[in-house]
Structure formats: structure tokens, C-alpha cells
Length: 242
Ligand SMILES: Nc1ncnc2c1ncn2[C@@H]1O[C@H](COP(=O)(O)OP(=O)(O)OP(=O)(O)O)[C@@H](O)[C@H]1O
Image (cartoon, rainbow, N blue to C red; front, side, top):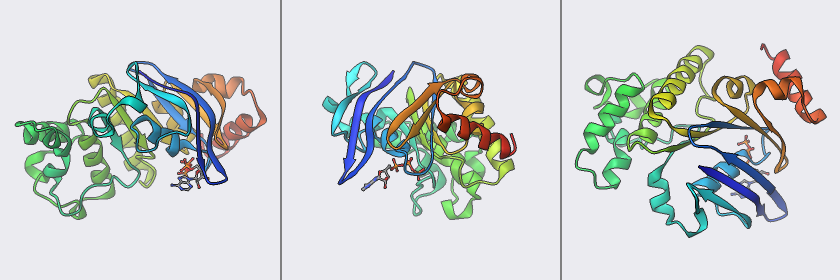
């Protein structure tokens, strides 16, 4: 469904991505894990052309992303950013129905309301509120609703639960996992947190300095780390309360 082949992205002297290859099968959730600056967000943004690579290629649903219209691509691919990215002067319902509305869907509000219900928010109760009138967890729920309202087959998530307290984060992780299964969404999730990756993803890609260090399911990473770096990451995650 998604693939990066030998992707290179440079920012001046920095090689944010240095020949990265990743494949994401239909219906799968793949987590991109790595320390700050390892290239996770850059790789994520290559899939919806918010960033264009300098080398290699990116495939979306069998077609080269470089030839796709970026706006059309972004309407087909849901995107959740770290801070939610809600428009502050739009109500919750208007935020949630943004993508169907941009696509000219006459039922945009109904789709937004349905998406809010999927993430456990009643449009009657929350729809007319402003983003600033929500808790951080509620805002992230709306951000997820917005990303799925147009029923995209693919959703990209950049540290969507990072800024939340542990209980809210666990609630949202469960809600997202359920929604992903129900809607059959293919997802790429950027996270610092190996626990979160193990919980939500079918496979984990460990990035380090713009390169893939190891790809595998959580069990493989834990039982058979291929590099000292991955072994260290696993050890630190255990120390961190796993
Ligand atoms: N627009 C940009 N201009 C210049 N350098 C950039 C830009 N975007 C990213 N970089 C650099 O590319 C590298 C990878 O950044 P990226 O944001 O992909 O890392 P990350 O793993 O997502 O980090 P974090 O977890 O801190 O978000 C970093 O060295 C970063 O400073």
C-alpha cells in the first residue's frame, strides 16, 4: 500500500534520510521509532508529499507519489500531527468535517459528526465548541476524527499521543486501535515510545540518523536485536517501565 525505496532527503549538509526503504502492506500499522532527529517525521511526510525526496522513490497504492497531485494525495491520506493542528477559529464539527468539505461532499457535516462519534465524541455536545474549549485528549480525538472523516484507506500519524498524560494516552491508543481495525485503515505511526509501537503496530521500523537500523515485529526486536543500538533501545524501554 505504501513503500519507500532508497529514499534520500537532504537539508543542506544534513542527510535527514539516507537511503531508507520501508514497505507497508494493506491493513497494516507500521511504527517509525527512533530518537529525535532520526528522520521519522521526514519519512512520514514523504508519503503525502508534504516533503519530496531528493532521491529514491515513494509509492502510494501502486503509483509513484512523485506523479500524484499533492492536494489530491492529501485528501486520500489522513494525517494527524503532534499538536492536532486543529484550526482555532473553526468549531469542532467544522474541523472534523474539513476534508469531506474540501472534497465538495454535500454530506460533509454528517461525515464529520460520524467521525466524531467513532472517537467517542458526541457532535451534539462538542460540535459547536471551539478547540480551545477542549482538553488536550479531546483535541487529539478531534484531530483523529478529522483524519478519518473522509474514510481514507491510509492514515499517517506523527506522535499523535505524545503530549498527553498516561491515562488519556492509553484511552486514545485503545480508541485508535479499535477504529483502525473497524475501518481497515493502513497506518504509519511516528513515535518515540517503543511501548506504544509494540502496542499499536504490526511491525516496527527503527530509524537512526536517516537509516533503517532494523525492521521487525516487537517480539523480534526484543528477542533478536540486530544491532547494539536496537538492543539499547529495547533495554531502555524496559527500564522505562515496561
Ligand atoms: N525543514 C527542515 N529544514 C532543515 N532541516 C530539517 C528540516 N526538517 C527536518 N530537518 C532535519 O532533518 C533531520 C530529521 O528530522 P525529522 O524531523 O525527520 O526527525 P524526527 O526523527 O522526526 O525527530 P523528532 O522526533 O524530534 O520529531 C533533523 O536533523 C532535522 O533537524
